[in-house]
Length: 217
Image 1 (cartoon, rainbow, N blue to C red):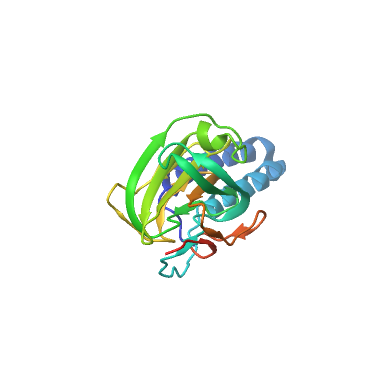
Image 2: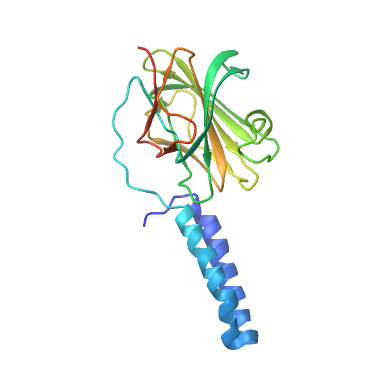
C-alpha cells in the first residue's frame, strides 16, 4: 500500500509510542498486556489506513466539476462567497470522516489565480460557520470554460494540519492532487449559479473520479 508523503511524521511518532507502550505493558502486565496491545494495534493500523494513496485513473475534463475529495455531500446551497468572488455562488460541501482518503484534488482544470491560508477555530467540520471561521485555505482557478471557481479546505475538530502545494500561476488539472488535510475535515466548492449540479445531499463521492457538476461552456 502506497502512503502519502504527509504520513512520515505521524507514522514515526505513532510507531515510537506503540513500541514504548507495548514494551511497558508486556513488562508489567505479562499476558494481560494483550488487553492494551490489541486496541493499540488497531489504532496503529488505522493511521496507515488514513494515509493510504489509492490508484485512480484520472481522466481529462473541461466542463465537468470533479469531486475534490472522498466523502459525503452535506450541503448544496446558494450563498454569498465574500472572500474572492464577492458574489452569489452555489456551494457544494463534502465532509470527510477520519476513515476517508484525505487527498485534496482540483475540482476543475485551468489556471490557479488565487491562494490564501487563514488561521481560525476548530468547529466541527459539518458546522455551517466552519467555512468562514475555521482554519482553512482558499484557492481559485480560472477554468477552461472561463469561469472563476473557488474551493476551500476546512479543518475540523480533529484536523489540525492543512497543506496545499499549489501556487498562483500553476496549471490545475481536474482530479489531480493539490493538497492534504490530516484527520476529519471538509471541502467546499463554489460554482457559478448556472452550473448544472449533478450530485445531491447524501451522495458518497470518490475524489478525482466522480462528476459532481457540469459548467456551461
